[in-house]
Amino acid sequence: MEGELSKTIEGYEGLYEITESGRIYSIRHKRFMVRCENEYGFHIVKLSKNGKGTNHRVFDLWRKAFEDLTENKFKGAKKRIY
Image (tube, rainbow, N blue to C red; front, side, top):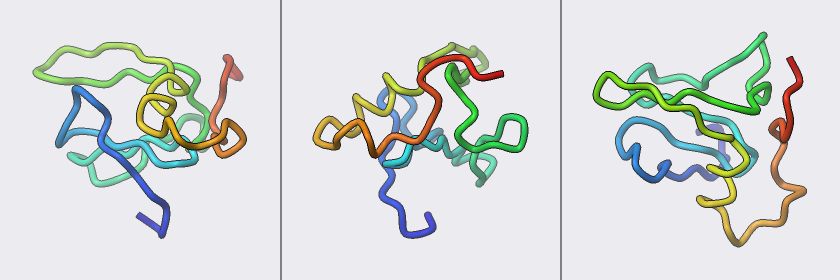
């Protein structure tokens, strides 16, 4: 994905990935999720699996996937911005 490292979101294998900067990629739709024309506009994201959606804090998903990266690599929203 555009030269940026991405990892599968645990529990959503084959459905979603998260990049090292905090963007969420939908494998099914083959695109990054966007809020208000901003790929980093999510504080909370709803991920769906087996017809059921669950809300997740994007920073928590990122931290779990990229434990070794420093926090300044995360470009997403840590708190509500919209």
